[in-house]
Length: 146
Length: 117
Image 1 (cartoon, chains in turn blue, purple):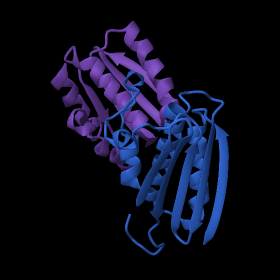
Image 2: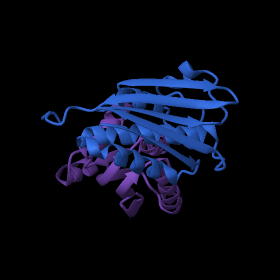
Image 3: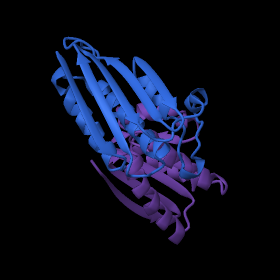
Image 4: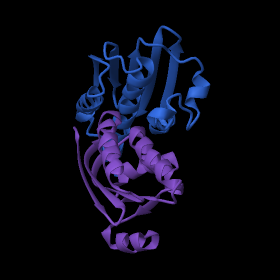
C-alpha cells in the first residue's frame, strides 16, 4: 500500500501526543505489532520534543512539519523545524549529551530514535532549522514475531 | 493522551502512581507535582509505580534520573515497579537499570522497602 501525509502544528508540548496519535493512525492499515507501534510512537515523540525544546526553545510560535510516506510496508518520516539548528550534530548524537541539563533532559533522544529505526538521519543548519528523518520496515503480516 | 498522577507518602517514602503516557508535556506536570510534595514532606525514597503507564520516552527517563540525583546526596533511592515490556525497553536502552532498582510486582515491594528503610 502506498500513501502519504503532511502535518503542521505549532510547537506546543501538548502536540507531542497529537503527533503520536496521527502517526499511529497513519500506519494502522499495516496492522503493526505492539512493539513496532511503540517504536514509531517513541521516535516521533522524541523528534517533536527536540523541535520544541531545542529547535524553538519553547517558543510556541514555531511550526513543526511532519511528513510521512508509506511504500508497501516501508515507512519514511521527516520531522522538520525552522528553528535555531544544531551546531555540532555528532556531539548532539552522543548518548547523555544535552545542552539542557537544568531541565533534566536525559540526552538520549537521538540514541533512542536511532535504535528504534532502520535508518536515521539528522540534517541541520544553524539559524535555518533541523530535519530528522527515519525509515522503518514493518514485519510482514503473517510474521509470528512479536 | 494525558497522565494521571496519584501520590502518597509513608515513612519518608513517596509512592508515585502513573497512569497514561509520560512524555515531555506530561513530565513537566509530574515534575511540579513531585516538587510540591518533596517541598512539603521529608522524602528519602521514591517508588514509581508504572503498572498503568502505557508510554514513556526519554523525558520520562529524565524525570526519574532527576529524582535519583536529588535523593542520592542523602543516600536515598529511587525504585521502579511494574514496568510494561514496551516501557521497559526505553528504560533498558537508557542504562537506567544500572542505578535504579527495578521491581517486578507488589510481592517484591515490601522486602525492597524493608531493605532501604
